[in-house]
Length: 358
Image (cartoon, rainbow, N blue to C red; front, side, top):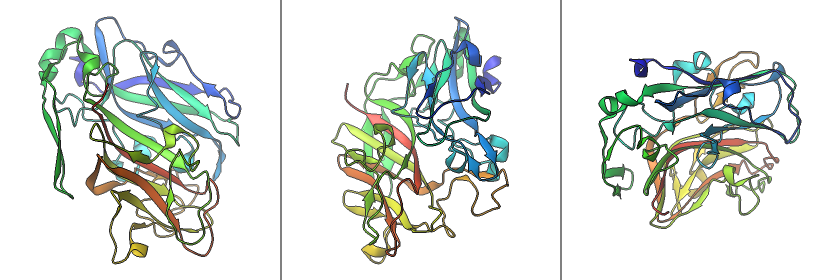
């Protein structure tokens, strides 16, 4: 009964240095990420031990991407590994134990079981940042379950479609029309979180973004948008212009405020409306100052001493918000006295990505 044993599926421990703007791509064999021919795996959560040279002195483990059967899935899962903004800290060091998971394992609900699925091997791709090379050891672990082929139908049954995704805040329901999928070893990669899905595709969604441009210093909206050069890459884009065939359910939002304390507010703008709404446009969005930031995530500092190895998960929204057949974006604002400098803040977002086109 191996499928009831949570275990490490990939363990990348690196003591080798990594130059700036350089990728490390260990083989599945090197990270114990290979499966037997009659096995299938699902990844539930990650843990990252970030490289540091001392309290508050961080090295740039800039990006971590899972690699499933040789395919990098950075369009869905892109994790920061820098200590201040780490999105998957060690489980035993997370405040209240509220770690982020890719989905609910062993479920036949397609909107819950969005775990990352693979059939042969698993590893990670790691990118060092542009400013600080990595000289210290770091570690990345992916945890989950492995199933024998013969066990899979009894554990999962049938993946239930059609599925209905409801946004209660605006009373909308998105229907995912698809035939139910009997779960077997052969259909494994066609399930949510798998790389061979037919439409509609359902995948976990988690990414981060640093502001590549300074804010205006006048409390105006700054979009975390790749097309306008506000973020570094498409994997950091937090601006979505969707038609009826694309959707994103936003479940969590976090921000690491700037050390200069010029950030004032963070939130979402969907179909022209701010979330959360305030008495005026100027007072909409979450207050996210350096000292009072309910969206803080990653290393608990500055809300705790810098030397404490304590972390917080990306906060969940009170109610998930759906971007579908409309424009949605993450926006930040400064306090109107000074601009937030380039790379001064980092936003993290979690949710479920729906694609209804080939």
